[in-house]
Length: 212
Image 1: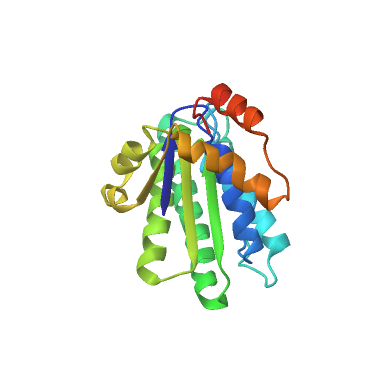
Image 2: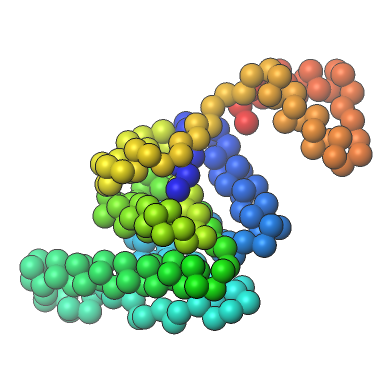
């Protein structure tokens, strides 16, 4: 697992999109980025969308996904205890689905990547489950990459969810040095067969002030 974190506006999402495109070009199964948000959309909803896309883009059929659980299944008059029981069942079902897919990758010799943005908004329960899948994939050598992107407290939150997440590879996104900023502007231009005028490059660097 890889953890990309930084302050707001530092280009984490752009980096994640670039990473997604490179993985796809290299032949990885890489669905659209799963995005958590402040409305507390849970992992079940995020994974449901990703699983549907994985089934469309995979050259071989992944395991069929079971129906989603939901607290609404117990009805509006359900007690808190009953609702909690359904949530536990839902989490257990989601765990089975994720592990079924990860094991299938190991058997099919396909490579896949799960990319998650705004992961700081995910619950500890959901982060813990994803960390568990990534950790197990590493131990079993399943060809699965899990990438979490979010604001700076993300790594600490992952460690609270699962202590072994402290061993996940952290990548901090921060202000670039002048040399890094020049490279970020000049290299893509050169690859496109064009070049910056000196005054234009200076103006761009002054405007960006190292913010990716």
